[in-house]
Every structure is written in structure tokens, then in C-alpha cells.
Length: 282
Image (tube, rainbow, N blue to C red; front, side, top):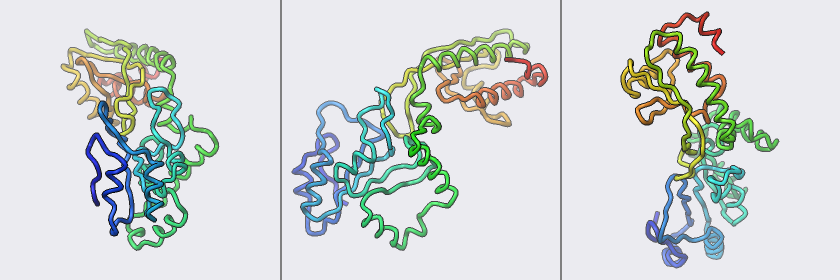
């Protein structure tokens, strides 16, 4: 493998001059988990596709996050979809089955039927291919895309959640948690709904900001936020929360109604609250 250009400045001539008789492929790697700002330059995939095909070479792009459709959010726009790469002349596109696609963890190769056919026959495929359960989960996810039912894909749904809807959920959950903690012997419970800046994560859309809300909690009698977070992680059903400003933070964008129930059950376990009393909290 021959590196081309520099970290922030890569031009067409850099690729062109690096080609030799031994070159078999041009590879473009999309910076899905970092961003370059300022004095930068990169070569459009359309130009690289033409260069590769004029020289009889394969053009491959590692897209990383694997976005199949536009997320529909202004903060997560500008990244190419798998289809747009193929339409631009890329022969092979590699991407993740999880991340923005929202399926199981897997590596995917899409593109030219002829090249994919050759890959199918490569001896290492049997050692590297995924199992049937992964394939079944991946197929189920893709069928949701085909039906246009992207709202049923948790990753896609969470990214596109309306901030006002998140705020209403946070207020409801705060009320439930306040009622539960009020039945303990704690003398001080600091519980608030606060605005937060969520991120897509998973190595996708670095620097993106998704406006959201979190329920922040501080229980001074149990020590710092780190101490409380540790206690929640050590429950029979671990509760993983964020932290900020010495408070445990429940980011409601990613908390479902079932998750709310599990969190409340966790606090019931933590303080050994009578289950009958906990069930009456709504």
C-alpha cells in the first residue's frame, strides 16, 4: 500500500504520480470518525473513479459509517450515502453493518457484481464470513429500509428524535424518579431536566451536535457522581449513565420506556424499596 498526499492536502496529481505498473487499485478512505478544517483539499471520488478506470484499475472507497439514506437532520448532512458513492463510479464500497446503518456489527462490501463474484470465490471468505444469526439480523434491518420503515430502526429513530418530544419524556421520567426517590430516607435529592448536546457517536459525524435533554441526578449522601454511577453499574441489571457537573446524566434520546422501567427497578434495588410501593409510582 502506498500513501498518497498529506493529512490535510491531497491533489489529483498526487494519485496520478503514485501509479505504477504494479498498481492494482486506488483506495479512498472517508474520514468518518474525524474531521479536517481549515486549509484542506481532497480529490472528489468522481475524478478518482475516472482515473482508475482510464488506467484499468479498481476504485474502492471505505465509507466507514455506512449511511444508506440521508438522516434528515441538518447537523448530520453532507456525508455520502453508499448509493451516491456507487453512482459516482466507485467499484467497491466497504462500510459497517452497525453504526449509521443500524444493523448488527459486521463489515459489508458492495459494488460491481463481477468483483463481488470474485470475492465470493476467494479462499479466505470461509474464514472471514459472518454467521447466520448476523446475516438474519442484517437482512431484517435491510428489509425495514426497503419498506421505508426507518423509524423502526433504533439508531435512525434516535438520531431523528424531536427535541421537544425528548423534553416531554424527560419531564415524565423526572417525575417518576422523584416519586421513587422520595420514598427513601435520602435527605437531599437534586433532580433536574437539563438541555444537552448529544452526538451521533459510533465513529460517525464527528463534531455533530444533536440538541436534546437529560435528567440530571445528584445524591450528596452517596458521594460524587462517579460513585453513584459506579453503584448503578454494579446492579444486577447494570444501568450505564453519563455524567457532567458532578451529576449522573440520563440522556433521554436513547432511553426507551422499557429502559425507564429498568432504571427505576435499579434504584428500587439500590435502596431496597418495597416492590409493591415501587409499582404504584407512575
